[in-house]
Length: 173
Image (cartoon, rainbow, N blue to C red; front, top):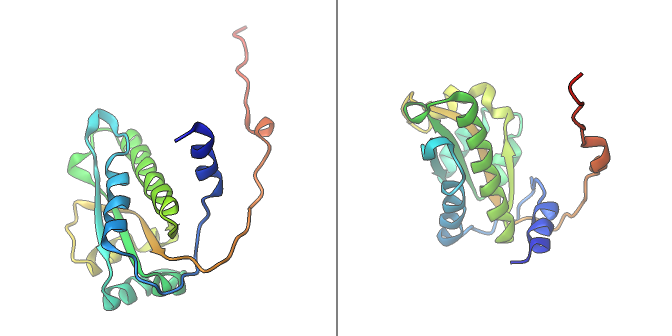
């Protein structure tokens, strides 16, 4: 892969909230999970844990815990992404690693032609999501990824110019 190809993949990824209903195959799910698994983490602690949700009743129960219930119900599947608290050693580094894990998963989904969205609003009900899925208290919800084959909706949100984002260091006085 050329660097320009990687940059194009990053630039073309979008949060997809409308799906066709076509099932996502197990091989694609495995690749998405592998991409998350290979994210960098401090001291290689790999604090992430994944719960793949395909069951319609479980999806409905999760949907009731978010403002984005339509997205959850319409998605073919969900991946609930948790941080395993006993595996943590430094909260800042570990939470940063979770962001890298989620981004890897989103990029892999996009590279496979799938649509995905990172649902963070659901964190207000993180404990209830964990309980619905029947998981241990040592798992803290970081996000739910909704996945499916995207409906044909293309748009390009505006980005601030790079010059606006650069903050030059100031020499010491």
